[in-house]
Length: 192
Length: 273
Image (cartoon, rainbow over all chains, first blue to last red):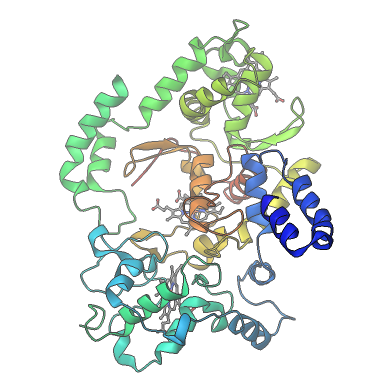
């Protein structure tokens, strides 16, 4: 309110008046009662799903008939944002922590890649849901591809078990670039 | 207390083997099998505790569970095999956790508005009582029926929940427990509770985390993996970790899984890694 009022005073009375309805609207929404735990759950479980998750929520957990896989991928590709300057390779050491901190036995809250992939041979607590990423940097994959895949895996494999971590904002673009460096850098234990 | 002593004993007995927990293994580790052979199932302490509450915990109106359901649970034998089900007196489908809570608030004089009591129930009475009541159906076949319209509605909801992809990790029960069943998430093998009729061993004592859990605890905890969020996933502010106790979706998916477990022979408390 204060900010709007100050801005209005500077620009002129006309704007102040124009701002009034919007400010009132915000005010009217404010005294909402606190959500119960169950209301929160319902918003999170139903309302916050995107249409793509709804498509994948079938018995096969795959793109259903009637939905074009190509269109799906195209829509997912369009969501991908790159770090400033388009630099898709960052700092591999920071990336290592995000991928799975060796000091914590390969755990990491947000990246948590070892839950599904093996990589650094020192980390034996690794899952087999996705392919092993050991030696990934030597495969000749374009780092930009790797970046896009981590940002939005469904641009390559719609409905995949691999989450769209950039898309949902679990990982920031710079953080994904750090992980890409961890996967591609020759110094990284993944490629040793 | 007896539970603690027993645990300490079992931890000592299992100390060496616990060190090798890192090795993914589906079957019961050696030390747990030994405990069983010695007749020292850590979960049995909960059955005893539940039996004690059943007979001795008086509500504000002076009633105990035994007042209505008989000495030694005589009138609850076989009840768990048919739960969750619709109950006319509360006009909803209830699982064991909710059913017992409703008995305490509707019939024993505990105040449903009393948050302190609810907390005490959830933390202290619920698991032992549920485990005791469930154990009264040991050796019987699971036999859940979907008949009442509210049971049909809950079954359909449960099936929907099973397949629903949601959250910033895009998970569903089906993704981990149907599509990826048999694979390993980190070191944990992913079971298929529908095919394996796993409900027969719930409530279960989980050795790794030293906890006795009902199916509500199990299902609610599985939701943590989804990264459900209110506005945008943020691990500190915005993470909707679990549905609350008694959430419709939880009871619904329990009904779905227990129906799939029909015919399985109840053997509780289960013992898991």
